Length: 61
Length: 164
Image (cartoon, rainbow over all chains, first blue to last red; front, side):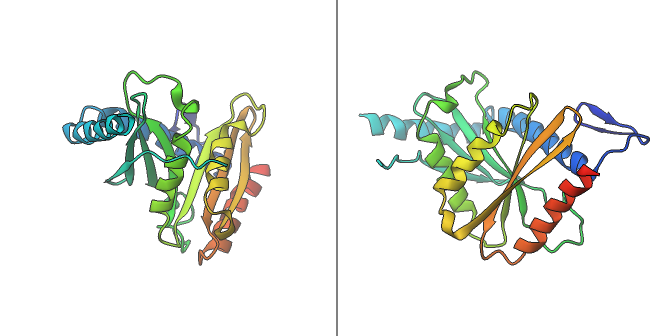
């Protein structure tokens, strides 16, 4: 049995290629959101964010 | 119409081709382009050229400002423009429409497309359903994409297979 997203795909369940395709894309979206949340704690990313915030401050001043 | 300036953004690269930008009220977003062509038949000529696109907040304390900041949309368009240099590239945007109330969830993708040089690009939508499960898919590519026909046929085959 393969598990896609939270919905198990039973071998006996007849799923179209389209549904499997979309479910996989939704799983990838969730994985990318988790990766993006983890990026927040990456010091390199934080350095970039700080530079972007400085530029925004300069913009408003 | 008054031109709205995009925010500055940085290219992070990585396996999902990440871009990063921070908005005035403090939220930082990543735009990612995940290679997704392999979800089609691996023999397809466009298998390395299809990317699932997402826009994601990365702050742990994100608020709901996304729809309130008018500069986010032109920023996303600028990022798409930056990513779309190669004519073979195709963007795929999927959203789940849980309540079945219509195509509102992918309105965002329509806005990106309308703002992004409509004349030189093609876009089409297709819907995949399974009972209450409903997915709205949008595809955007350059009009000179050499695989335009193959991509269109492959997507509509998915939709057709779904309707059986």
